[in-house]
Length: 338
Figure 1 (cartoon, one colour):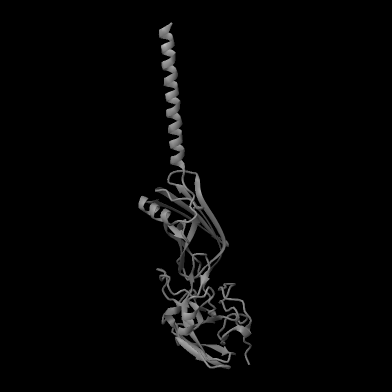
Figure 2 (cartoon, rainbow, N blue to C red; figure 1 turned 90 degrees about the vertical axis):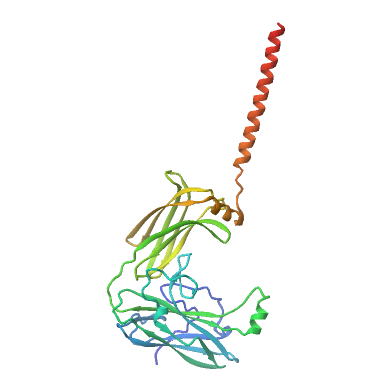
């Protein structure tokens, strides 16, 4: 009988993890495990790492187990891997717009039952059907099968007033290749703009991996300048990032709770991964209405007191001028008396 690793944290592979509550198997409402087939490339892994052929159809089997005394309904969703804005590969995102460079996503070629009910104290097998493209595909198709417990309408109603909602979830990663041809990742800077994250002002640079290759050990340093000037206004450095094939994310540079100021700026960035280096530079403009919109919504924003200092300076200047004029007038009167 094949050895099967019980997946308590089934986040694909390559040290990519999804935040799931750390609880014992006894507390879980269901468990899943991948049935590793014979065309597995790395048999030491518990996710699907498969060598496929053009046009090949294959059913991937996942064992779903329910050790509780009640039936459990699980929602199943095959997803294409994306890169989130923290530079982490995700398999459970269904809202991010499809990357413009993506030709074949895992979601395009994988189908499965949307819901599976596992009877109490029993096991059920789920088939995920994969249909490879007819033409040969060079590179990596990366995705995952996302499992979440379906809660009842009554449970949902009760949980709405609760601060903590436990909804158990797993991901089994799927990596598909057809050959050993090496595809090198390629990074591209698409756009730079003023933005907000959690009501804090940031400048975001959209960086895209345009090739069907997984990018690991990525570090990015970004700097913001006034256009035509050398002084660095804001900067950020992030390391140990990863990118899914044919994906993009917004690299954020915080303004450190400072307000946006309208004007023309320049973004300069350097990205490194192993022996590869990419350099970016792009001009962008922050318009007055954009700055005002974000500044009004920003929290913990440092107030710009420049106008107060200018006003104080003007008042001091006027007072000094009045004092000088008064002294000059008194001096003139004294001379006239003499």
